[in-house]
Length: 96
Picture 1: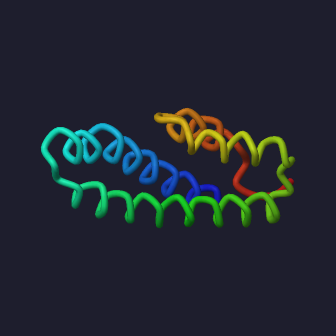
Picture 2: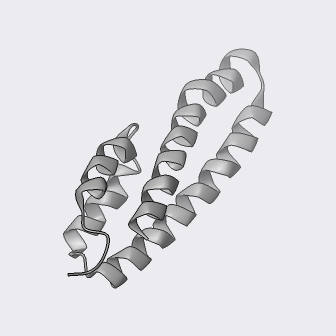
């Protein structure tokens, strides 16, 4: 389950960076709103998937609410999911 959260987190993080640093400039500098529409939809779907997986992991792994909030807030910050990926990598895969 943690592995899935890490994978979705990294993909979500990349989609966020693409949205911020490629799609948004295309929209405003080159009048290409379709870039944001497509990338934004993909990112939104990945964000919701990550959030649901996070909730499932919190329940199954008995994580503290503060750790869950930390992981959630990290998704709102560019490069945040890549930082939290390192923490998730060190966690045990099963509930102890």
